[in-house]
Length: 215
Length: 203
Image 1 (tube, rainbow over the protein chains, first blue to last red):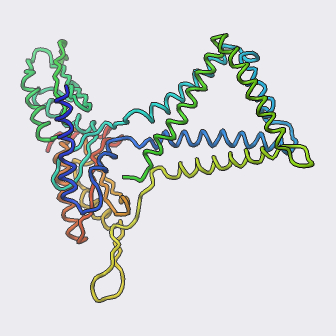
Image 2: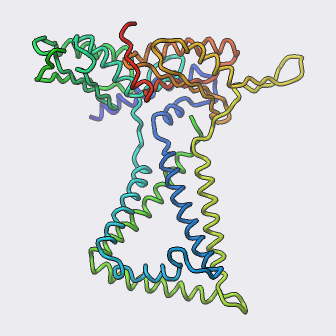
Image 3: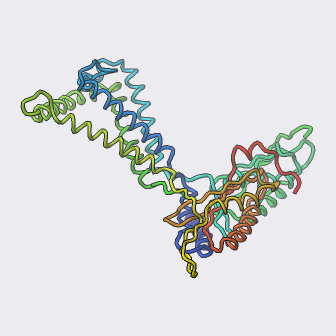
């Protein structure tokens, strides 16, 4: 396992170095590519920021209403504090537990967003002149095309799933027409070699046992 | 290629997430475990008593009310401003200038090449290609230097390495015209437009 990881790291460093060599000095293309293949968490940040702003505005509103001496909009700060202090009483336990679960789930969403690596479904392509990132979906479509041509089936009979280290090719052959698993594997691997994504995924071909009639 | 503050995002999201998680778990425990409820009663009683004492000690001289309220309101306003500033940092970094340089020749003046040059040139070169469903060009300022981001949407089944090689040719041609090698990132992307377009069957 460790040898696989090492290989991956070496491979990952290679195109970025080549890229920065070919470009004007000053911009670290390796850093740009690293940023491009990882999520910036801008959406989560937007949600979190808006949430905090709305909460703060509500607190300000209630305090201002109280300072002016008007009746509170939903609850005035003093009563809120007293209710929170008295907590398990005054609120049905089911409601309290449900509210807690919702808040904990939202918290978990933000926390996982912050802690997980946030890798995007993208691969790098080796090109001596420019830095290239490819969506995994594009790679899957290209591999599906070569698998389809090798198996001589229609587009609907091939499904390719591309993840960081793995390519799974699912083929449902036409009934009565033999399909060679080796030929498909060979074609897909050849296409993958020509493409040269980083990190290079491993190819698995699954031939479905049930065929498609009349395709 | 944007200058989104990623580390800050992670830190702030982590803090907020952890706080919400603690509050949520506490609420669940309050609802479910009587022992926690007893602990909460004694603890929150102490906290609210000491808070009341603090407010009592910070009265306006000669008037009813605590000046701590004003401090708290200001703190909340400051928090709102900080949050707005944080949100405003997301996705920044687009610029209009492909090149801004001083002219070393005898004619006084500077040279500015707008991003529209690269955008129009690349878009025109890519416009009538059958294997691409669309292309967008954007210029970002990365650490103060302009960099080009070329997003290409190939139709399903088109080999990305071929698209990348042709994009590299175009970029070479462009840098010859502009006279400066701009760093380029090509993003070969899938999207709604490519997903529903027909596959390229004949090439």
